[in-house]
Structures are given as structure tokens and as C-alpha cells.
Image (tube, rainbow, N blue to C red; front, side, top):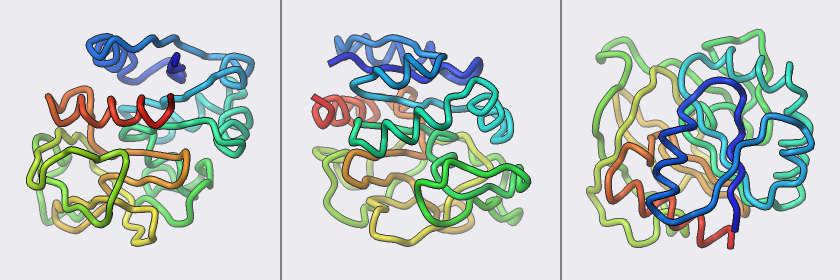
Length: 201
């Protein structure tokens, strides 16, 4: 199984590539509509500003091929901004529409806590999940963000708390996403990536 990394000109693509290499997974980058359309499995990494990601996807013509691939069942994993982009919109750039694959909106974390939320934090599992299989309760993952999704729907498999509860991981058929960075989260993060590879195989 070859994993196609959506390369939109920014983000944490090299660190994700290295994490996949450590798992002996084959990966390639795609920055064109054709590359996305041909993918057998897709991974959308993301760091930085929401507007930069959404504008880059639109300018490169990747929005349509990406949503079409997910719609026809291609396994997908979004990381950090790659999770936030799945919702309708974000307060970080309210003028831009997200991919609108999930209902709800991304909001700023409360200013009563230190922002950005950067460092290690624990997940609170919400239900059984193939993506989080084999990961012990109380495991820590690495986060780096100031915005998060607050949706409480059935697709959420784990939440996290920083000032408020937010979506830390979700799974809906072939669609998976995490707010944390598995490529920076040690053994637990490697297990998440391994689980996704197994789901995609």
C-alpha cells in the first residue's frame, strides 16, 4: 500500500514521510489533481494557518479531487489542520469554506489558557476505534494548535482538554483525522500511523 501525501507547498510533509519510513511504509507526494485522483490512500498533513491550507488546495485545484476521492472510499488521514479542514469553516479564516465533509465549525480555544496549546496532552477515548486500537488509556500525544473542532457527534473517537474539550481524533468509515501530530508523538503516534496503514491495506 502506497500512501499519497497531499503536498500543498507547506506543512510537515518531511517529518510525516520520515515517520512512515520508520514503519517501512511506501509514500509519495502529490501536488496535482491527477496525483490525488490516482491515490490508493491519502494523508493530509498540516501546520500553520488555516487560510494558507485552504487557499493552497483551491489554487492548485485539489479540493474537488480530494473530496471526490474520500467520497468514493479512498482511505484518508488528516493531521492537525488536515482535521480542521474537514469541517464547514474555521474562525481562523471565517471567509473561507472548509472541505465541508463534516458538520460543524472550528473555533478558537479559550484565551483563559495558554495559547497555542503546544506540548503533550492525554486523550479521553469516546468509543472503540480502529485508529486508536492498542493505545493505552492515558497515552500522551503531541499537540500544536490554537483552534479546534468542538463537534460532539458520533464520528469523534477521542477528545482532549485544554481550556475546553475538543476533538482529538475522529473516524468515519474511510475518513480519519487527528488534531495531534502522530509523527511527533513517539510510540503512541507510530501506532496511530500503523493502524491507519492497516486500515488502508
